[in-house]
Length: 448
Ligand SMILES: Cc1ncc(COP(=O)(O)O)c(C=O)c1O
Figure (cartoon, rainbow, N blue to C red):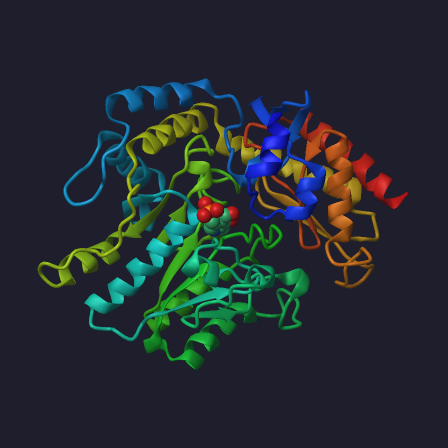
C-alpha cells in the first residue's frame, strides 16, 4: 500500500468527514520552505493560513530542528512536577516575563502542550485563586458567542460555536455572553452609537448569574475561528472595568493572537486588554513542537502562593508541563521572530494584505465585510445589504472559493461565512500579491 492508502485505512483526521476523506484521500506533506509546503504528489502550495494560524516563522527552519536535536541529546524531558526543572523551561519563563508588556505584570508561567490544555489550566488556576481567598462559590466561566477556546471538556465548553456542541453539550458551569461582532451585532446595534453595549452585556450576565458564582471571563483579543473578528475600540478597556467591578478574573486567550499575529507581540498590546491570566500556544513554537502555556499576573500569583493552605499543592498537572525540548524549540522560534523583525513585518505586510483584499473585493456586492488585524484577515460573504449567507447553503460560498484556490496552489480556510487568510509572518508583499492574484481568479471561477 502507498501512503495515501495506508492513511485511508488507518488514520483519523480532525474536523474531517470520514466518508469524504476516504473518497478524496490525503495530501501527504513532505516538507516546506518559507510560506510554501511541498507534497508527495509533487505540488508546491502556498500555506495561506500558516497551518492552523501557528506556523508564524514559516516552514523549513533548520535552526529550530538543530536546537531541538541538541536539547534531545542533553535532556529531552523530565517532569516539571514538584521541584524539578530544566534550563529551557526556566529561561523561557524568564524570557516571556520580559516579552509581555512590563505593565501587564505577567511574570509567572506554566507550559502546557497546546491551547486547549492552557485554557483548562487557566480555569483551574482562576477557580483555585478564588477558593484560597475564601470565595468557594466562584466556579463559573463566562465566554462569548463566536469564541473558540479549544476542544477538551472545559475549553470546549468555553468554545461558543454551535457546531462544536452537536454531540457535546457545554458544561453547565460555562455561561455564554454576547460576543463583540459588529457585522452581526447580536444586540442589533451599530458602533459607536452602541456605546459598547456588548461589553455591558457581559456585566449583565455576571449580575444575572451572581458575581459570587463567577470565577472568570475568557476572551480572544480577536476572534479567530469565529471569523477573524477584531473588537471595537475601547472594548477591552470596558471589559477590564466590568471584571474589576465584580472581582472576576479576566483571561485573555492569545493562542492565535500571541507572538506577532496582530502586528504587535500580543493582541493585548493591539487592543489594550489587561488580563489577570493569559493563555498562549501556536506561535510560541510555530508548531515545530507542541507547546502552550499560561501566564499569571504577579498579584494573582502572590495570592495563590500566600493564601493556599499549608501543604496543599496546586492540583493541576500534565505529564508534559514545562517540556524541556518543546521549550528549546520555543527559544529558537522566538530568536527568529526577534532577529528577522517578524512582528513588524506582520504589521506592515498585514496592512498591505488587508489593503489588497479591499482593493480586489471591496466592490463585490457579496463581500459584506473585509477586516483584519496584522497578518490575519477575512472576507465575510453575505447577500447584499444583509448578513444572510451568500451561497445556497451556509458556508457554501467561502468553501467553494477555498476549493478553487486549492486547485490554483493556495491553501485558505472557510470559517462559517468567512474566507480567512493568515499566512506566516515572514510573508513578503510580492507573496501577498501572489495570494491575491489566486484569490481573484478563485472568486471569479466561483462566480462563473
Ligand atoms: C483562540 C484559541 N484558543 C485555543 C485553541 C486550542 O488550541 P489547541 O488546538 O492547541 O488545543 C485554539 C485553536 O485553534 C484557538 O484558536
